[in-house]
Image (cartoon, rainbow, N blue to C red; front, side, top):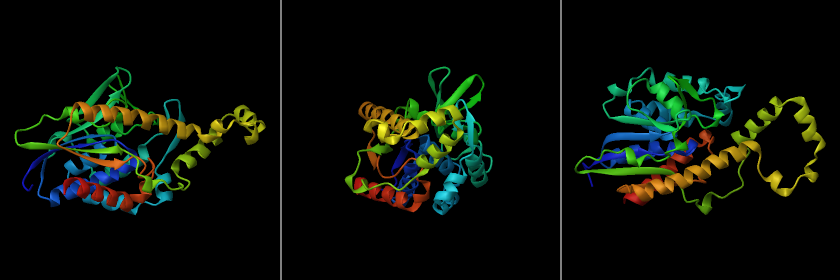
Length: 293
């Protein structure tokens, strides 16, 4: 359907958001005109960088990342609100995009974050792109939140991981939503390699007070119930957030049905697997072709 106008909604889901890049490029190849972008978390990052006109440079950088490169971007801290400051990561984003004002984009763009202090969504439709993206991706417990103007801003996925409801649909346009929390695909169920979550857990263990470390040493693995060995603290935090996002996404799709829903399997990769850029991009291409053909 060439020359169709599209409202594009990009959901949250960590590294799976690289698939958003493929969907945007495939839409343009197919002759669609994207007239609005609304994004949450990684969807906000990709959508905002696209709306600002820097997607090709961002894609090139993402594809160049290695496991070590990803881990080196995480500036660890031991603040009470989180253990990754996020300054190194977003300094690199700023290097790719330069300073940008959302209201100056040729395409209307909205980034969704969550204000924990006032218990509400925050929609960035203007202002500094860097601040909007930094707030939208602040996974609670992982990233230190953005605090300003009486707000404590964290990941938009806390309340609205696929913000289809924010679309003000234009006559003759269609809504295309990309859900990064799609049903798991058995072909991706393979033994995972040690990833950033495991590396983060090791770092976290090093930061624990000596009394807690000694207590853990005295409690040998054989003495622990099987259930206690099955998840680390970091894995529990990640899984809890993901499960909540899954349920909220299902409800949003049910209430605000998009014209086209592109699903990326939730087990396509781990939340921090940004070193797998080309593979995840291909998954996005395949999902688009499967849905839109």
